[in-house]
Length: 465
Ligand SMILES: Cc1cc2nc3c(=O)[nH]c(=O)nc-3n(C[C@H](O)[C@H](O)[C@H](O)COP(=O)(O)OP(=O)(O)OC[C@H]3O[C@@H](n4cnc5c(N)ncnc54)[C@H](O)[C@@H]3O)c2cc1C
Image (tube, rainbow, N blue to C red; front, side):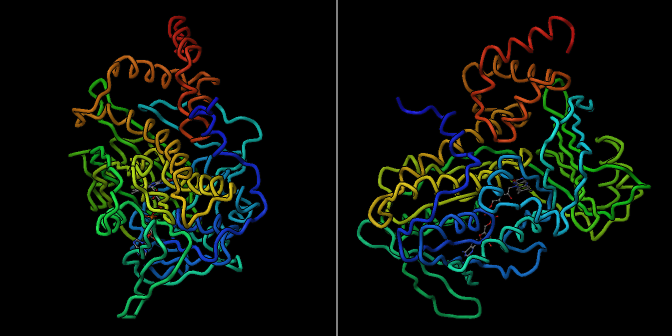
């Protein structure tokens, strides 16, 4: 019997160390050297004699860079992503803590839903969460990947692909400071150029069908600022505050994270016309008015480093390579180049890490990458994308400005998911189950079991939630 999506999801998310290297090609080329590209390069280091990463930005240091403009905003790493980092780079968390990621030991983060503090404690012995800025995390991954003897990064702009009859045989890029493009042959090319990747255009230009694109208009507006961490202002360590749509509420999300360098990174976000500006006074007012008290305390009494930085994301989008009927061999896509979600659910980096696990599972089977299209890879990636898409787009269907695309039975599913969220505020088993799905450790099918909803319903009928 074919494994279910939930079983495949669990296999892809495995913590089991990778199998011994098995060389399948001379060279692999990875276009884009951010989280997805770096993770793919780490996997490919076990299957290619040589891995070449082509990245547009100079990437020395651990500050924000133009190619990853979202890097200034709050980024949370989900537990399933941390598992993959530990899997591919044993001791990653300890190393990142040594390098300056904050370690708050047993101190728990706080989660507020609709102004109410969630009461469920973390399970005993929970691994310390890795809370850092996005550029810091990426630099930790990059350092480890580039330490491998067969991985190299070059700086330049990828401009296209080289095609053979049945597929791709390499890539073209213009090195930094050069005028002329360079052609590089490869057994496998990875598109890790993020959500604005032009891979579909390149495919079409050479007579290959593009991957169908699906979009959901989310109209999300972020504003983040860094502050010097100061105990006399607040003891906030990690705080998430979410106002969910419904009952006339204005959906919003905020977060305070203690990050490396003894700083807070604080986010306030809204949707559609609810748009924070770069004005510091307006930012502070928002923090005070719409979020728990520590937000206002930090904004009003904390010392801001730099200024408020805003970011707008118009849509969630996915490119369904699994649905393409004619797929060239020698080519895959990973990370946001495949699917880019509403960032408030924190799924992006973890998805990219799970795509790397899909790549590993495919290559461990020993395919002839130069003649066989990567269908087994894209079929696995689909399982991850479907799961993340289901969680985030279903939640977003409740946003007031989303007026279409609601599936049949939407009201019933919405009622059940609101009930689960309500129960998760105080009921430990429900909270663990829900968290495990939102942390991408468990497939969302785990929440659709009758027992899960019945438990929450019973609690409601007993007046306990
Ligand atoms: C506001 C915001 C907040 C977010 N918060 C979270 C969060 O809390 N948790 C989370 O997990 N995810 C979050 N995400 C999503 C996360 O940022 C992405 O999922 C993740 O960065 C995807 O990585 P990637 O490597 O696929 O793409 P990207 O990080 O976008 O990187 C693409 C890379 O390709 C390079 N590139 C592009 N074109 C070329 C070219 N032609 N030639 C060479 N190089 C090229 C770029 O320079 C860049 O390095 C957030 C996103 C946004 C917008």
